[in-house]
Image 1 (spheres, rainbow, N blue to C red):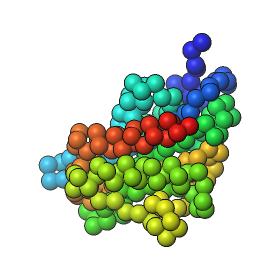
Image 2: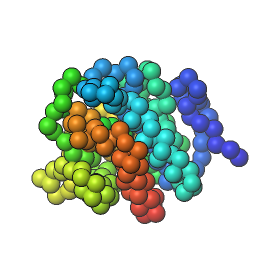
Image 3: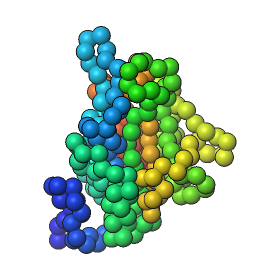
Image 4: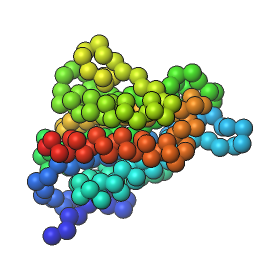
Length: 226
């Protein structure tokens, strides 16, 4: 029997119940086209980075790889133009948790970091992963992502930023999408969109392939462990 998507073309949740025994990856597109400030300054040649486009491209690339690997996934936020409320995103995640089991799910929210509002180039740079405050299963998963990023990014001139104050690699903040989701949840900040060096990398096919591979490599480890 074919599974039906919980999200309709209009972005609303369908009432159909999906049953599954395998682990599920829930992919959240960070922000939308209408979200203010989520872009880079313009390069002299007119090029510009937009976080909504990046996050959707990365989620698309990840989902294509997961499909090849026969790993279950759902895209939580398919909308492009409308910036879906964080509580709505979390509610969608929790609907999946209700159907698949919260211990059988992992939410991954895909973002690019920024230290400004897209008007000027800034000096902050680096890749990071975030969880909620306190020791949870999410920390374990976040460390797997960090270690995969550590294998690939420095080889390509990119840096990572970590917070080892509590013994692991992730940064912790009670972001709504993470705090209100019932399942383990992480948020990846894939370099800085307003750092010129990071941004050039994020706008390149090679850079996006590497970011995708970080996520897919980590997901494979997590799924194999579950």
